[in-house]
Image 1: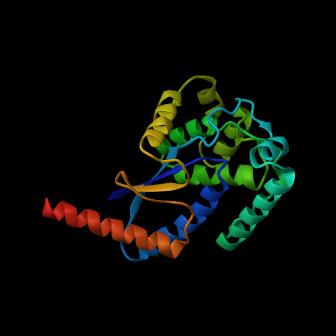
Image 2: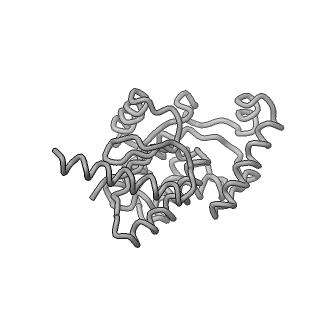
Length: 217
């Protein structure tokens, strides 16, 4: 079975939209008999973010030049989300968190075999429920609700920290600068939250090309 890596950040709105499209694409491919092993890989959009995060409105105004511009971008994201079947509640989102702890939780979820479900839970917690997913107590509750208990204890130590930081840096060194990015068997296919039918077509094509290379080797 081929592996599909999704390089992502838990505070990337297009990553949640991309996951919705991905789920639809995977369902179509499964009907055709093509299954993929899904892995979520870390990328920090704001690697210099303070561990406690920052107030979102102020951060967005500084990043995009004005409160109005930030609100305009939020409206565009919300519209794209509705088309993909996910609901953004920007009115509930008060803080922009540091996401290193969320990436550590996702790494733990991979070992437990529920990474895809935990990724969805993190996206929903932040973008719909307005949770501070930089806070250990929030991550502990959200992960437990998704079937992964014990994250507060994990986050109190340094488990998975070195691995997450190394993978984040490796993605940057490998030329990835935007998320979501999709790789099949470590081959970069595309970046962005393209529609499900185009995703499925890209995965079919990549699978066929890789299979032909293997047969020719």
